[in-house]
Amino acid sequence: MNATTSPTTARGEQARNQLIAAAIAQFGEYGLNATTRDIAADAGQNIAAITYYFGSKDDLYMACARWIADFISGQFQPHAEAAEALFRQPTVQREAMRALIFEACENIVHLLTQDETLSLSKFISREQLSPTAAYHHIHQQVIAPLHSHLTRLIAAYTGRNAEDTETILHAHALLGEVLAFRLGRETILLRAGWSGFDAQKSAQIYGVVKCHITLILEGLSRKESQA
Image (cartoon, rainbow, N blue to C red):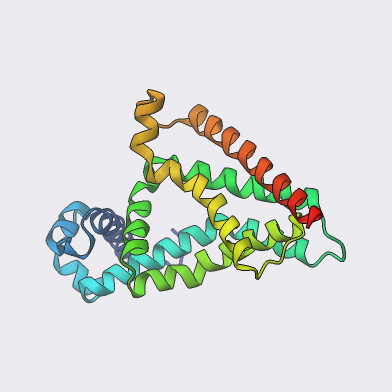
């Protein structure tokens, strides 16, 4: 604790973080049907703390969305900066772009095979199916920029137009390969006979994803060169 942080401030920040963590879990499981009473209980806080720190349940829901957006942004900011640096180069750095696509997808695989991020995935999945203002915040802050970066990398590597709808669909389909291991979590655990994900299994999943990405990128490159 630094000299400008009082014990009261530190306790308040801790309480706020506990409420957000509990709320993400509850909202991910039950959506807006989650109760403030259950959220407060899971956080080990008095229910009045929600009003004190956030205002209403809707305000808490938006705070969760902002926390998730900040978390994702923090995880992928280095990738976004690296992509922007490559786009500024006078010539297309194909191998560097492919390596960055691999690196970003490896990071996604790592995050999506962690139990700690399961509640975040549930929260975002609910918003994907029934979007609210919370999803639009997450989308505008991180998902749209990251999706755009991936699309531009794929386009530059394969020689396609990044603004073409089909290129956007290819980028989305590539992401879908990775997301399937989260959204289809129980299926792959049962089919593979796994009890859960660990570092070895995460690496194995990434190996398969990397193989598929390679096939996709090379296939699209050949298709574009023959057009």
